[in-house]
Image (spheres, chains in turn orange, purple):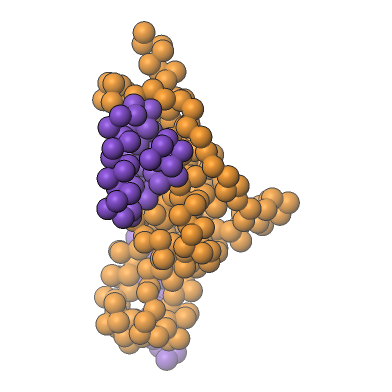
Length: 189
Length: 82
């Protein structure tokens, strides 16, 4: 990673190409999940990499480019969301527990039902319905596999807040999908 | 371990982030509690589905190529300045 930063500082085009290949889709996914708009997400990817180009000379050897890019991208998303809806507090998080209520056994569902395009659309909808703060944690931890520490650094929250939010996000998603699958099961009976 | 405790430890259990003693206690509870076993399985499947759905989202290659050429031009311009 240090070599990559050095190469970027040298303005080595291959280094830019590598960073872009490694991170563009990840940043895009985070942005599109927050903004629900492909064009705005493209804009976030562009602005994030432009900031990298502007700031690369100030990077020290310990900097993690991936985490840095995510942090810039997340802040860009939040800025755009606040611009669209200034009256909404996007940072507020309900951290109370979620009690699982729908207890159908997914192991008994036909596989074609679980992986159908309709089910995947339901997954997308359930993720979109999470608050931005919970959604960001789910994306960074469960989709992009960042560590608790890395996710905390990107979102500028404590590691314990990452864990609490991830737990809540997972249980909320589970409940929504369990609701969807239980309806499908009842329809097939 | 009871259901409430299992639920509190669920995410750490899934992430393999519990002490051996708690893992054993969780497994003992799961072997006898059908509801908790369902919650564990459905949460793991939820994570897998969420990951698969989100990972499917990518920039179109055309937009990605256009964006990259803009960035490469800006990168080159800065190298002229430096």
